[in-house]
Length: 259
Image (tube, rainbow, N blue to C red; front, side):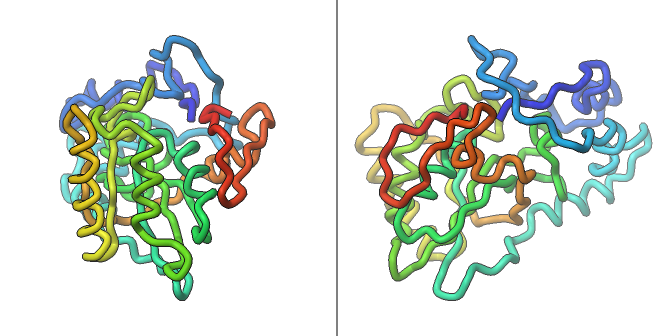
């Protein structure tokens, strides 16, 4: 999703850099959604509410002001790093995947028979209740993920893994095409020991097929923060230009990630 435009002078990353508050450099908004891309695809729909001021963003991390409380930052990170406490529907399980821009990834999973629900959001970061603008700074370490709910009687976790590997390049660290940043990293986030085992075995099989090292991280699923409503089922709803793409089960139409 293209980043919403903010004033460079007031961006959270610039402000935090002046204060020397961030842990280390994060990628700038170099996003499919990217100013650095060879061509600008389009901007995401503007939200009705304006982004929170930069100092409010820093306050979430306990860094508002030179004497920010490290305890606030630690508390935020502890919440964000907690387990996903949501519960799937009876007879269903959750799975989480990060494979670049979550628009196209979600549509690919929507089409899988046995998948009963998909949601896009943010996970694996160190900030509680992040917004899209927070994630775009690259400072929160969140990944853009799709949380998939699937009926275990109609869909196997291995089926989801097949879609995951086919949808992206797992050998490019923090990058998918023109989308650059930690929020585009490749990741499988498991809910059960069985999912972890299947994920690791699947990675080993994929590695034998590729001549470059796979960088996909395999980690326990963390708290899932649902992305803003306009991101949900974005391509199925038509994107910015109203070009609806089918989410029908078994559909194999090419996925146009940018709308």
